[in-house]
Length: 246
Image (cartoon, rainbow, N blue to C red; front, top):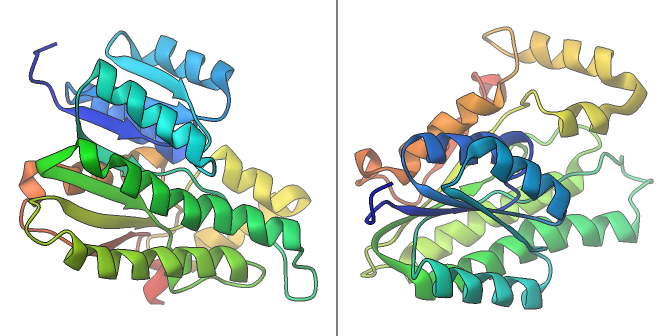
């Protein structure tokens, strides 16, 4: 590992899309830091991905956790070149069954967590650094029972619309990759006992006849983070096989 290798932080990096992104960044020779709430999952990720990957337990809804995370990164790495704000989640609940607890959980993780992850990382970002936020096509096409989740992702899109101006002159780029339905365990878990019917619906809706794989989302995130995207700033890139356009 070269001493000047890029340092990448991936929140929610121990499973699903986050793990795929961390794996991709590591394969590109970056020093990768993954965060998550569960130390055991982080330990498995580090053991799988190798010596240039570090795991730091942190809950993005906790400002104290984030402060400790960035202090440790400053002490051990000195900077962040690529920030991937991926930690998030959704709860299916139609109007009439939305609970305060599920509302708070989704806004705390998907909006508050993004705000204070990005803001906390700013002092560690340099000109040429890249921020990639993992959104969702639910920002424009939430579907039934996903109103609150979709609202959080629409909020994130509007945060970035403002932040791209706030970051003017810093040399820091910020973009969103918004996946469509992606083949992760969390997606299957969300459907409960309706998983087969729900997956069939998603496959049928897709113009290319399938849902995405985490590795495909990771490729898009890696592009947005890379120097190849040096003139790409402030966009929401939908990686969904065209499903949100139908």
